[in-house]
Image (tube, rainbow, N blue to C red; front, side, top):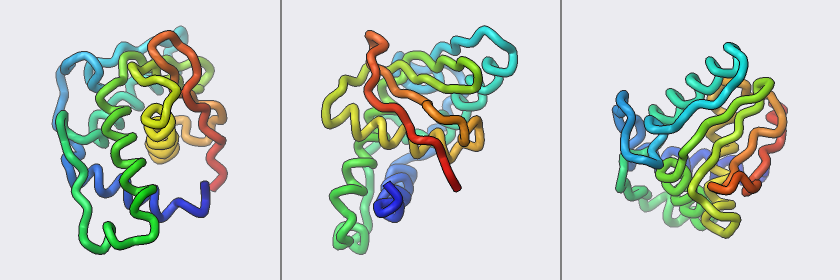
Length: 159
């Protein structure tokens, strides 16, 4: 994953150019981060869930956003990866139903499947959670499908 960090960072920037910080503060349509349910037994975990939810609200593109890529990005050798992660971020943000936290480990339940789109969304999820400064060094954050089957488990952040 470290080889593709420039591509992944560029992907998140491309998605943000398409509409980061959609400004949602009230619960939105099902699948948007603002409408996500928080599941946590402990107060500390509930706070982490709320902080992750706020981070997703700020960093997810607006509904129906299309990523915008500069000519420089389109000509980059990382463009395929950038585009894949950008589209994965949009898919993730459009599919979040629950943010569950247990002993600081975040699990997002989504409408995604364990397919190419779901795995791209899983990579985007790992990048977002590791950039959130909310339990970002905790290993094992997970993206699940609607049946709570694993799509992606994030590696521990090491930097």
